[in-house]
Image 1: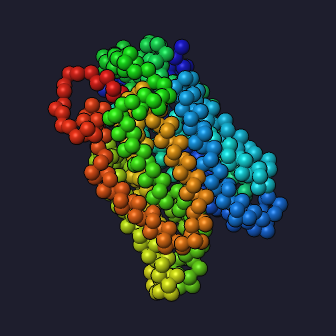
Image 2 (image 1 turned 135 degrees about the vertical axis):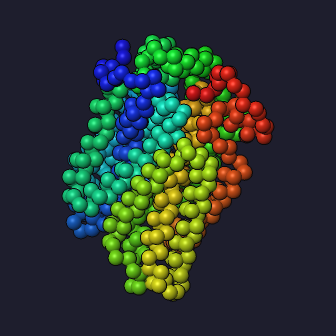
Image 3 (image 1 turned 30 degrees about the horizontal axis):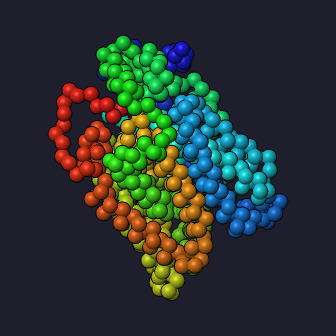
Length: 488
């Protein structure tokens, strides 16, 4: 039976319909990612408190404790990716995503009950487990409820939600008491669970279960047209053909048996790993600490406190994510990703140069504005391209059959990379200095520009046949009046 909520909210509309329901549902679907954003940014405004004499942990935390708190999420997240990836194909996108909010809620509850180091680390492990599941299910869910014309925009909601979470926790952490913030953050996954209970499963998964009539009703609600409309019938026919030719299941063997799909996998993996190695996640987690380091120079003209500068970074991140939502379906994935990668590379190179000049006793104070300007540019570039677009490309380069497998493998590898990066960031800075660390990040970003130009196909509004033709080095004429069996 179709859920009451979307029965009631379905109103009469013109045949061209509306995209409002798709957008609103995408926002709700991405709430666990918002919760992840709050968890990822939570350390930055609380690090000084937790390591101080007035720590809620009944004693100051050590640098090692904080390091484990920052990185532990990314140990359990890759494990969750495989579990939730299989669950999404077996039990449905909706059920898998519902249970992603459960460990996230438990994690915040544990922090409220006990604030000793072991409890805090364990709580973040729970949040990491739920977040890992959300990161593999949310892009699939959003892709499968969105029509082609807004698929890029709704795909960016995954990272936009994360940036909203970062800003929210930076502001709350600066203004409100420790435990008040935790109560607010606990409410987010609980609200998500309650709302998602009343929303529908994706049309693709309903069709997989043989629920053709319910699929049509859900599509009608999502597109804001009667479920008897011809456009809905055509879309249902498309899904029937897809389900007939390719049933989804977690099967790395099937992926590696298809040479073109395997090549697409390597492209998607490299693009996603570049997102991790650009260093922006480390910058966000350790934002206050980096600004505090920059502020040690007596000539540095940074007027804001480290926490206030972190809030500024999060605001810049929000604007970048909003820009990505507006541009991704206009200019395409590849150009936007290349430009933002170049911008991040240049800004990180400049930041490394500033730290080098300061360490060498140069006149760094004359450019005391540079650290915050460079970091803001880097975070803006990250939010407007480097973070959201790899998710969009990943879901657009594979058929329904392989999409879950690819998302699971790539997210597991990416989250494992995040763990290594966050665990090694502080020791690496002590060993080779901030300047060398940022120069490494810069080199990766700039190298990515050339990889994007020469190796990555554009995926905007293109069928899998066309995308794979580019990967194979072929040029195919666009075939009209042919149903694309591999493209949703």
